[in-house]
Image (tube, rainbow, N blue to C red; front, side, top):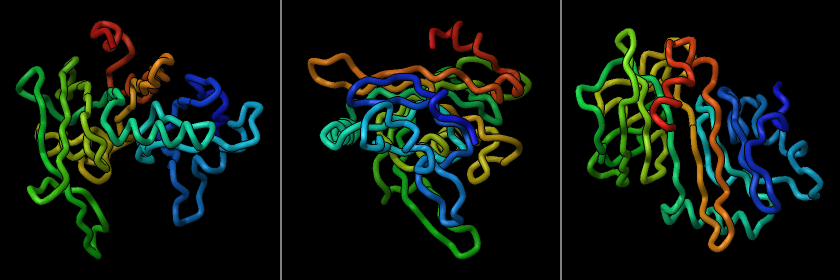
Length: 225
């Protein structure tokens, strides 16, 4: 189990931004396996209270995760996410190459469940509005490195928008893609406004798994990301 104290990207009196490893769920799984909750006691940094996550990242998504260090900060940060004033940028590798260089995906999302497949999100007019901006950064071996900037924060939004909006699942996605290897979806940048105070923000380094797929950090440097 990794020491998450080594994964702290930003820390002050009210906020902590963590570079969450892929494979670590934010919420405790039903099977009782390890989750972020098991690490919270080690992330107090002198405070008595445990920090609490303000939002969620999927188990297999790595990168920037915001935790609040006191209840008042948690309430303010949650309101910022709800109001859509938080800036989020994700990096992903797609199992295919979009024909265009950039664009915006506006597909409403709805949760469905079946006994055979369990639950998943689908694109549906009756769902909740979801908007994602995207930009192609690089191409290699029939795959594309893409930056996603979501306006909304729906469950599995980027994963479903990649599949239905661009026509290609994210590499390694076990639900909406082919599921081969680790899922290459990374929360690269997070910035949370705090009124007169400087924003709580951080950039998470690209995991080594992206380099294995042929896309190292140099591709982000070239794109200014």
